[in-house]
Length: 484
Image (tube, rainbow, N blue to C red):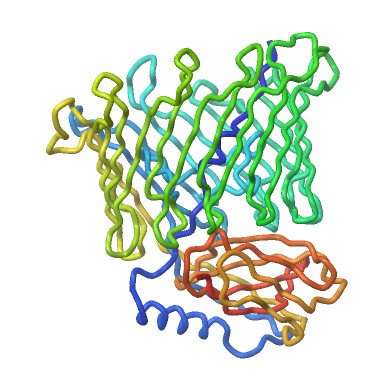
């Protein structure tokens, strides 16, 4: 029986930066400006400079069952040079809001092969579902190229002390977009499943199609195609997958299996996701997710999910999540409710309370489970996050004059344009730094004429340092950018 690994639902997990200061008003603006001015320094010349910035990243997390007085899940992380970690404020559904691993293939997260934790390896301990004993579960080891593209990922599970269980390899094109992925699943060191995936892109470097092939009896066979569409603001509005998991002969035509249709608000934030699945006869509606936001916050403050009841032909409410914000503007109380069809009302299910350190990184997440009448006074589970500070060193090499470049509009809400490049600077890498010196967003763009367009969608409002590099790593310019 063929096995096709498709994790397309990851579009609900938006990557969110969180490096802003917790100060408000003019004090926050002043601190941002002082930092940016310090990094901007004098106009760049051809001399190489080395800057060292103290940053913070997560190195471990541990979840504790307060009633059983036992650990039930832990992770330890080792980093590559200057590796960063990014917390996901959109999910806030469970302890794993630091996504340690981004599957290198069969997974669309807006940017392929970009984990939110840029680790060298991580080790994972959890409770064995068969023995109910807490112990080692897996170790994951990755490799990157000089552009921090994830080129290798090897997973080693507890049942295989010598041979890897899964290995992924990625190849990238000249624009640092993933070109081809290979996936292997092993049994005692021998590959018994192999897949490869090819990607196509539009002129804005957005993926438009991927094709998956499975290796069987000495040949590669097409088993899946997925198409991606965008609106005028480059928001992903459609994911349409065609495959046929029941075809053991590799001869039947591909069938439309799943479709995601997305809408966005005026600030290009995900508003709704309509999901349809193949029911054996036709593609039918299945789930609707709706998201609500407040002000300019990039993460949603409420999420509702409805499931289609085909028998009664109506959308049945399923889950409702709301968040409150602390004085620094980060979620501190998360309430999750489920719908009770008997009382025709939302009823409490789970409550989480998040605590943060001075850098606005979460240090503890308490989870309370509703017991049909009330929440307990003691949390059922507590997750602790542990951090390290490190010197984030960035080497500056500049041979180009930035006086010729024009950046507009600035300030901006969604995108900025930079005009005046030389034709030989075909590929441009853009890095955004926050007030603490952490890299918040990395993008690669191709020149259209002498101009590029860069998205600000991953940034929360504030002032950032934008560093532009050519494909050889030479600094073209450093600019102060204001996100509204």
